Image 1 (cartoon, rainbow, N blue to C red):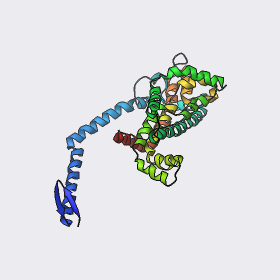
Image 2: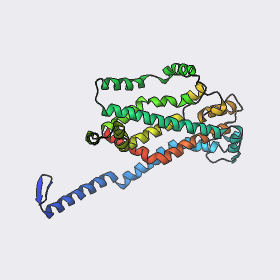
Image 3: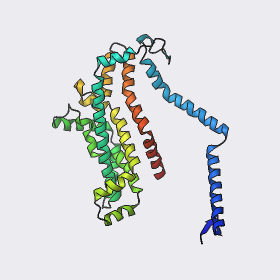
Image 4: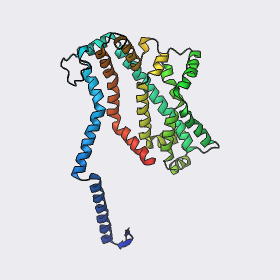
Length: 311
């Protein structure tokens, strides 16, 4: 005979189960009602959401409008152009090797994202799973490297790549990610620590190797965190301008941020003052990131939400 306890009362038999089920449904209904709120509250939240969204969307809408205007109308702040000039896109494609720059950025971005996700995941799993003397001290040193400004490392890194005769190649833009990132190691370690250790102990009893523990158990269970790392690095690598400015000298090796800097030098301030061309190039550079977030949004928000629950 089933015994079900509800609010300190013990009921026996089917009637007790029905009472517990009704009480559970009432609690869920009350909770859903509190979450939904009153119609006035929902209307206020909707208005605030629309206003905040408009604030964030306005710069991109303005940029999109400026990209199809003639030069004399770029700064008139009208979101609907009086003179529609889509030929700006044809001119930018004919003047600069945008397709080459987009391809270079795609290859470098994917290589950097894959490298840092794999390397950081392996290091984070090591810190989370293995117990060894000095583990916390070593992890503290890894995390402490985040306090070093990136500018401090620019000269030593350049000297290393120059000594390797690779300072004019694309390799310095993604190869350092093979050694992991302190921020991503910290992020992924928190996920791995939340996994039940019994899963790994049972797998070890069955003869699983450490690589199997990571690849077959830890990585699938922490897939949202790995996807967040991957998307974060895609965004960081795609928008990086500093390293391409340091290492890339051949226009055929430019990434899109470095190419956009070349467009700005030629058509922006100090050049021909054709800001509609600069706006057009900026739209072309921005659109891939919008598409990446659109397709990865579900996994990205899931990973952030999961991290919030673990924190």
